[in-house]
Image (tube, rainbow, N blue to C red; front, side):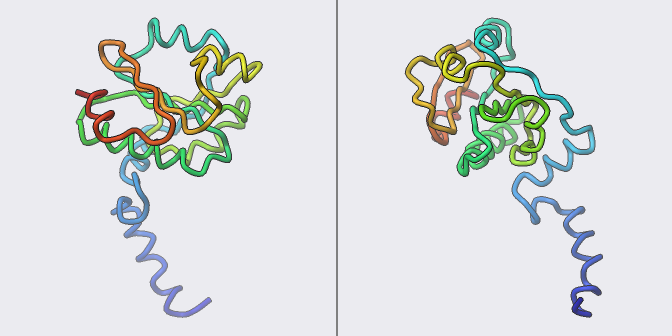
Length: 169
């Protein structure tokens, strides 16, 4: 190991812990979440879960449907999380993994700093997607924003600033 790196390594680690926002996006939120306890369970998401969430789930809330291989899903989630932090509101942000079942979904939680709940599809995927939105073509990220009044905004990809403002406003 290079002498200068071994000398600076403790200082760099301390700086990353003290200023996580400099080290990674959402670092301070991820650190705060880690301090209060990381998510350790995955909820099953079947064809009836969506109806139940819309009927009696939290409002406002955001649901990001994703796959383990989705390269743009963490970016979309990050935009949601940043909007929520900027608003100063406590808004649930859920990630729903479509291709990883059960506890294996926890291995992907680090991609979603600020996530409040992780779901994993449990059942026949096309039937679950049909229950969420019959028009959805299985493109991810698929984001559903549920406003305080229950109005839904469905977005394939990252929501625009106007959509986020309408959702949180």
